[in-house]
Image (tube, rainbow, N blue to C red):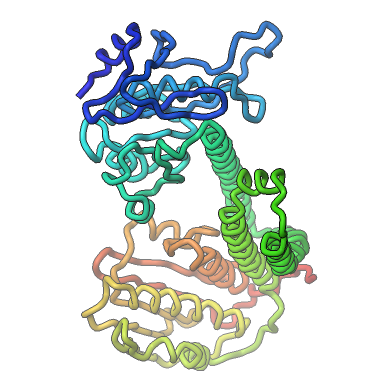
Length: 501
């Protein structure tokens, strides 16, 4: 195997540079990367520094322009030289390229650690080992958990890494053989990769910004709760929900129209292609550059992502609206046991066994309670949230094979306070998670399965609207218990004045 130093020495010779397997060599000539046979000579440009700029000196060019970092990972020096020539003077979005070179997987790992802002990698498969490139992909995606970097696999030995197998099993962004990667296609791939990287960075930055904003809102919310200013918070949340709901409704309502229009336009293009008797060179060239098949598939994925995102926002808006309307039900004297039973009736379909988990047993230990003055609908909402969380835990794979059980206990804590305990024998929670269960937007469920507002709203209902207490007690491996204490007809309970839409 040719070493990195050997390759640099070859740079001073006029003989062609090849690897042990006598692969054909890529070289830029005119507008293409072309293959050279054994008897052709490769003019190589001397370059001592492995990190080089691909933009020529220009006295008029603004200073402090951060270049796009790309890395070529290949054990063939000629491939590095050809790539430099192909991308010479390349600029995207006003920024030049900075090329990093590695001749093995181990060199590439070190460069990635030193340059976490690499935008994309042109990666060979066969280097120091037959799967060195594929091992590098797994290192980037799994060990570093880096999904920013766009990875384009280009190989001179496709037999060592079949395209379908690699695409299915490795998280790469494109697959090209060195034969098909002409200069124009290399430039196109570079633009696509940089655009994708830029979009990923933009999304991450926006996500960080939104996370900071959300955290600020959460802290503000908790402060308002602690200082008994829930009415002001309700008005604020109602306004936010209203302002968000209008544009998201517009977006969601127009996605299907956009999907239909895109489908119609693509169908029209296909119809033109089928019925155009004499192909027009300019049209054929444009279609080849656009890669119409990829474009049509990617558009469908983009529209699906937009639909998923708008649905997610709509669910959060609904949760915010519910949070701001907690005072709508009238206070009245109710039987706590009736509320518990009605809630269990609604959830009956989730308590029965199915193919994934056994039947959930409900053990009731009802004490003798006095009627309680409360907002019945909202108290039932608290019961529903706690029961639902217990069922979710008991139906996870960790509990399969156990005897899933929910325990309900009611009693008079004292002469003026009703206590309701709802416990499960699930996997429990750590102390840190238990402390955060009432935080707004905090959830341990997978993305898309919970907004993290349910228990926060429940806490507000009990502590603010009923002047009671809601506690969470949990231990890993032993289950979780929620304890609700509600004053029995306390004169301090008053309906908060929260503005309605």
